[in-house]
Image (tube, rainbow, N blue to C red; front, side, top):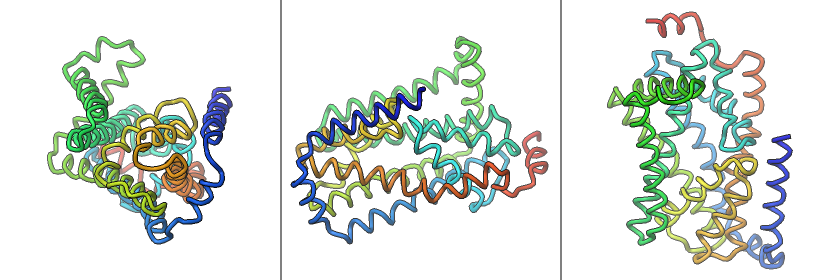
Length: 309
């Protein structure tokens, strides 16, 4: 029932967005698209799983459960289809099942949440700094509020206040802190994890900017870096499937002074295709491999012994 409601809301939101589109102008925008920047934007899609796999490899090393880059890439691609069709990418938690022979459930869950908080921190930091430099106080304020919220959550858990949470959240909070400490207590590893996260999101900003360039809309890359994180945060709200519709509406609102409605709507659709659906298709064989138990091909007994140590 929840899935049906999400899909229904997604269809309604897209229907409302479509009603405001001028069909003739939309066709004209697409007909005049320049193919070179559009192809470059499409090519950037395959950078996302590569950078995510590199980051995951560093994270697993910090947990004394190293896996190869290839296995890390397979894990990322296997989880992509479910992450793409669930609100707030909650389907990414399927990694808990895929790694059941490598890490305990609680440790993997805490790790995934800690990893997602790093993403949120990087996105909000980009928005706040970009908004300040470009003179957009609202964007800067929203970004700074989210960043401080993430930092506050870490401080709340780190100083032992997790014990004040209800039992079902207390254990999860402790798992998040445990995983986080394993990441940031090694400065070199933490530096590379954060740097890769910045690179991954910058690739997303660059891809969006290339989509605007292909549709002959002269928007600066700096503005995209500042405004796009806000649209991404809106898309993470568990209202529609994979943020479709809500992210597009936010994109149209934020970029309305720089491009036409039809152009912004087209870029929103391209963002969904490149950032979600293309890699979903690529990831389907890996997801099937994972559910068949043939994904990592690692000696789980060896990894478990390292974890116990």
